[in-house]
Amino acid sequence: MSQPQLTVIQPEPGQNRYGALAAALRERVVAGEWPPGTALPAETRLAAEHGVALGTLRRALELLSDQGLIERRHGKGTFVRGGLTGAPMLRFFRFDDRQGEVPLSRILARQAMAASSEAARRLGVGRGEQALRLQRLRLLGGQPRLLEEIWLPLPLFAPLLDIPPAEWGDLLYSFLAARCGVVVARAVDEIEFGNLDATQARALELPAAHPCVKVTRQAYDLAGRCVEFRMTWADAFAFHYTVSIT
Amino acid sequence: MSQPQLTVIQPEPGQNRYGALAAALRERVVAGEWPPGTALPAETRLAAEHGVALGTLRRALELLSDQGLIERRHGKGTFVRGGLTGAPMLRFFRFDDRQGEVPLSRILARQAMAASSEAARRLGVGRGEQALRLQRLRLLGGQPRLLEEIWLPLPLFAPLLDIPPAEWGDLLYSFLAARCGVVVARAVDEIEFGNLDATQARALELPAAHPCVKVTRQAYDLAGRCVEFRMTWADAFAFHYTVSIT
DNA sequence: AAGTGGTCTAGACCACTCT
DNA sequence: GAGTGGTCTAGACCACTTG
Image 1 (cartoon, protein in one colour):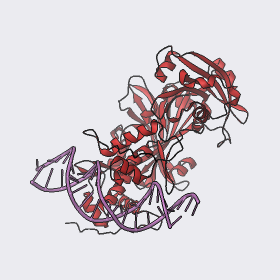
Image 2: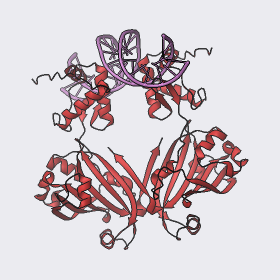
Image 3: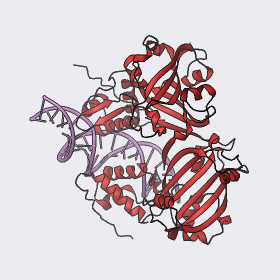
Image 4: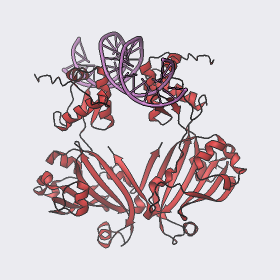
């Protein structure tokens, strides 16, 4: 059926072959040759296509698996990961008795506008480029718990302007994947402490100047482009996080 | 010289050979056969000793390397890691312009006493067992920045009772390794937010009830025993930490 | 039974480090 | 040059999943 690609891997000097192979495979994934959720060809076939031994091919897949791009399942195959989906922000907090629950989302504001200088810097776009700015409140057990300001680069996420926020659901990343074809593969969070301003405090139903945690997130798609800049504020006393060091 | 050990690896059913091999090698390291800093025998020799192929032996060493027990250096050898040594607590904080600096340590109190119930639980010893309790202040650029309460299980760390705190130096883990033969291999930190009590605030030269971060650490030696329980308090506004998620 | 990934082997050759 | 770890190969066999 599909013609064998027969791309022989030629590593650059100083690079090893499985590294070059992994890069080549990553490009094929990013190009959409195997969409998220689908399976790659079998090991033996991929190895033959690129003219390497099985062990070398396996080494390359191991790299991509460690990076979270693919997922290997014994007896079934090698699959392209669907990207982040859960509600990972909650791993930073402990709100009483509500561990596994997905928080409800309420969109407070949605506006296409020129990116602020910080948003432009974080998103890696030119200053003053158009972007979509969202304000979102997330509730657990009826209580407002997280306040978020989200910036999305605009030509890319234009579909969001046409869909009523009520239909967005409670998991933003799943929604972005389904409606805009953007898979969030990786995110970096920065954590700081501060105080809520009056508006923020009102939204979270906390006293003005209450201590808060501010989490600043940059999320990236499969190709490594920054596709989201988000700031999240929440009650500092609900913060709880564990780090293991070696 | 040393007789070849010729321990043939027999993996338990359901376990793979390199896993069993890694466990066996870990035991030999923990038993002190190769003290921290020294080199293990060469790959070919180790593989022969345990009756496995080179690839399998390498796979086992890879596991131990990922776990931080050993460190491999191309062209030189495979070395037992010396354990944690730096001032890792500072990775949570940003005090103005003093990034690489090692903070000065000032021991405020040192006392052998029955472990508090929390200390006993965290150290994994019986309630009321003797332990060594330290209070330590750490300074950067002359300013007090971190306040610490440290619990160490006692028969193990008895040497500390005889050495004047002035001679301890500024890196506790290096000191423990040198004087008590305890290598700290791994640590788990829990981060919470709170307020300083009056005593703590005075020590840190901050207003009473000032917002603070409390880091609770449990540190483990090569064999996996908990050898330290530590609580650290610092100005919440100096906290800054980055997490990468996949 | 057929197809997938996981383990293990035996051996060749390369790259780095020290003397 | 001798010794170390790093890469790569070719092939055998095992374990898991599905029809």
